[in-house]
Length: 411
Ligand SMILES: Cc1cc2nc3c(=O)[nH]c(=O)nc-3n(C[C@H](O)[C@H](O)[C@H](O)COP(=O)(O)O)c2cc1C
Image (cartoon, rainbow, N blue to C red):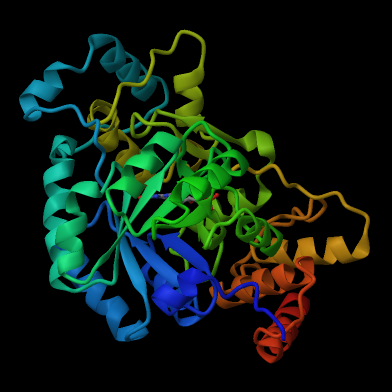
């Protein structure tokens, strides 16, 4: 009897074919991943409740009854207060620093006052109502424990997932009956903590044993070998973000995709200069400036975004590319491996925007980005080979997808 290593409890409980969850801000990625047999989770933190309702309908039309989710940010540590109170808490030192940066670098002034970020929690609660109303199968909380909403969500038939970066956060969520805890290690793109994926995942798996809560591994997972490792550590699957940025379906800007696939390990770091919490991201002039000698400390959330959001928007609208960035995982896997099989595996994945071969720095064109489907299948294939298990899972489709990939590469 052959055992399919990719059929985990996540597949049993959610009806996905393979235990790969993709977080993305692009609806097309969500639909493509879900339709490819995984689970897409839509990052809706910046959408209004009305926009979110229409996004959900769009996704439902494309995925039917397949599982998908919506992710919101509900930070527990938001400073309280109305706009005026919060404004008063922004120190003059940080205001002066930002004014100087703008003057010295010709960054245009924001035209209008933006809505207060202090309203983030209220906004998230309204979006939650939309999620329940639309009977979205999964609600994921990106920051802050979703424990307070678990019973209500279950009453609406929505499963509750929570991202954690520390064992104590995981314990709290497991005790509160959260359905899936995502153990997100230090490597991860976006808001990332201090504990490494390989340390955090087994610890959270041990905590969850016998409780009914499943654990997903996250942080620096971008190929099949890492998926195999996550399953070996006891995770029911993986939660991934960065790998989907450089796909055709992703709305990520082309120059960012380019920088992403060219990035070396030292081009990625954590910075609090955007949201006030540490975000692992591609290096940019904006975050470099906040790390320079003499720069003030970034403020806490939501004061930092209140101070800088409008300016970052101007930077983006003015196409100041060197000042722009995206959250990404650690880029520690630049490849210089002579072995042909490994090389081939790596360059397959690299072609998908996952791991750039170090000698292939040609200017990227849209054609070099693979589709979500190709990245997917290559990941699955790597897993099967690295796990040395019988190639039972969709062997035919894997072969045909690889053929398509090779044809595209040779174009
Ligand atoms: C571009 C980008 C934006 C992200 N935005 C969010 C977000 O809004 N909410 C959230 O819960 N996680 C967000 N994350 C983190 C992902 O949910 C995920 O935990 C992380 O990407 C996993 O690590 P990986 O990038 O190494 O795969 C983001 C990640 C990336 C790469």
